[in-house]
Amino acid sequence: PMDTTTRGFDVGDRGETHSMRVERLHGWSTDRRSMEIEVRLPALRPAQLVVSPRFENAEGGRLRPYLVEFPIPPK
Image 1: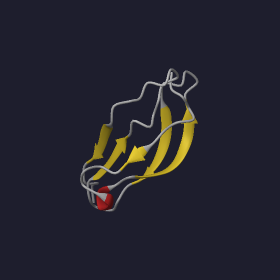
Image 2: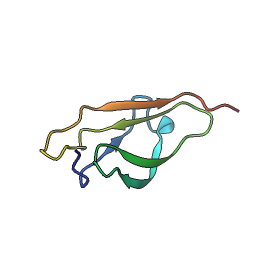
Image 3: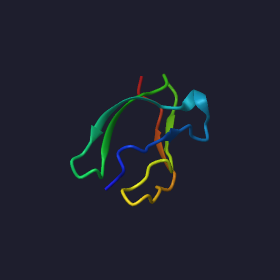
């Protein structure tokens, strides 16, 4: 289970112009092992978001950075 008070998202290696923006946290699952977020994608380009080590589990262990990528959206 995760600590629901710590979290963070970073820009991927493509930079700010290809970054997804976290718009809203909808909430954590009851077992605190997953969360639902709403993101805004940049128009007509690949998008990235890094789930950062600021996420911690209930014992204080940090996640390894994890890159989330979306390809170019269809026209």
